[in-house]
Length: 113
Length: 111
Figure 1 (tube, rainbow over the protein chains, first blue to last red):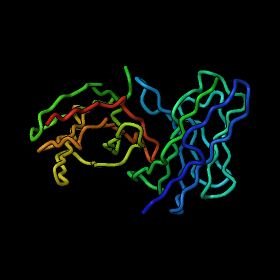
Figure 2 (figure 1 turned 45 degrees about the horizontal axis):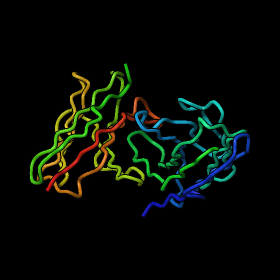
Figure 3 (figure 1 turned 180 degrees about the vertical axis):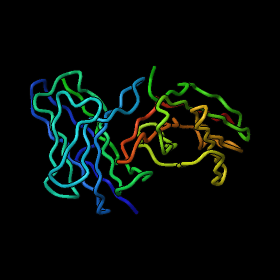
């Protein structure tokens, strides 16, 4: 079974704090993705990566950065958290090629006060 | 116009009936199409994927794709209360597995 894990299920941070969200997958997938999900807006892609050390901007990268030092791990960084970054954050992974299934982690619900 | 559009619902369906969900997309170059189910408080899980025009059946689920009309649909036959969830349509525009999601349709199956 594919397993994607995320470091925290719930997180409360203060405005201006640096926040790290970690995602680990155990299926040797090349592709990894970070989304945020908000009511009425659906899932929106923040960043993705097709390989170690490689990253590409998604649709809403502003205010975020990522790191992929190892194939199995993809980190999302909020350099200076703001209240409008309160959201559900979902990590996903997939094998390379078109039409591949993306497997999602359980999500991290982040509240920025 | 959103790239991928779905009716937000809720779609209320009696138990045992057919639930019909629709999704339209704007990019004619889209190649692959996915339906994910998401229970409240949980992460999305894949139900169906479809790549060519026509119907694809898997158990009680049937996905239908019409590239000329740019829509993809999902039928749930013999709907069960356990089918109550939000169904997300996702479209892959080009190679690279980058997906664009619709806002989701909430389905309520009433006993």
